[in-house]
Length: 300
Image (tube, rainbow, N blue to C red; front, side):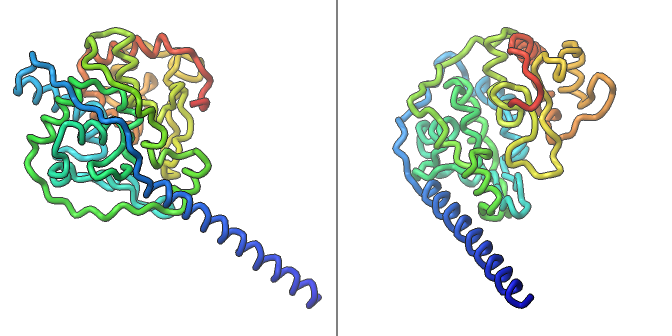
């Protein structure tokens, strides 16, 4: 009996050592990936000549509210702790009003928003730049103008810390911790796009939905999300998605946070901010969803 206990203790010790070795390897690989300084192509912002400063500010405020900026960086640009639970770590959205002093050129803003690279060459962690790569110069210039106009707001934010679960999920390819490594840095965004209730413009707006709902828009568990977060809804016109919805149902969901049966939609889905979209923007998204290939839920 004693002999078997010794063997059991040895096996357990070897198991612990193996787990420790695996975690050491993942930490080492992730740290090296984070610390690597890429040299992405320089992308400037072409400011449209016809836009006045006032119209750019108004457009920027609308985009900041409806394109996801407010949901992470806060109403006043003060930043927030988006995920602050171990073992994911503390994933923090920067205070833009204090950080913007480091952004001394249009290129700095373009690289950060569209390529996930900070002005000093660091990779921005958890910043979903892969969802903003196609952001047009006109829209980006408007967002920048609005951010620069915000008064400086103090906020006591903890430093970013990457926990073991975030690193493991990143290593497994299930969590986009370092978006800069997944972006096509050769892509050149358009100067502008015709805004209107079209499928083309709707697909442009849907870029910001792919982080949770997947590139195929069929939803499912959100990679790296806290365990109490709901799964993302299937947005395609599949029977497991929005096949039975009408446009009015969609508008109600976006504006009131209610499904067709009246059940509430979690605010993990940022409908309070997305619901501030214009009617024609919601019509464009609906048109794009109707044109998307139907897919069963969970295929992302």
